[in-house]
Image 1 (cartoon, rainbow, N blue to C red):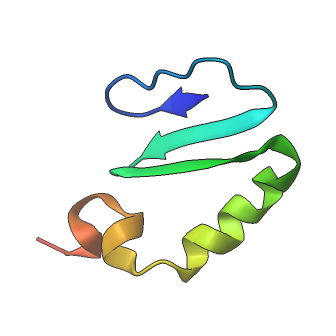
Image 2 (spheres, rainbow, N blue to C red):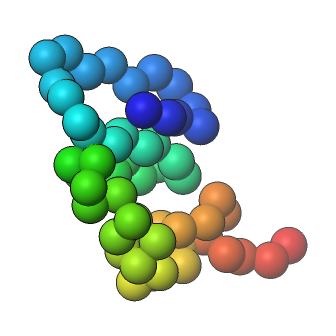
Length: 56
């Protein structure tokens, strides 16, 4: 379980991967964790990156 901001609390779960980053929470069985990168690559950039990929 990992979070870049705030607290994530789970109760009574096993073999799950829980990741909270950039206001997105990903929860999946451990054996499907390798799919995370593919899933994130398909999300719009405004959801994947802090600031939505906007440049200053």
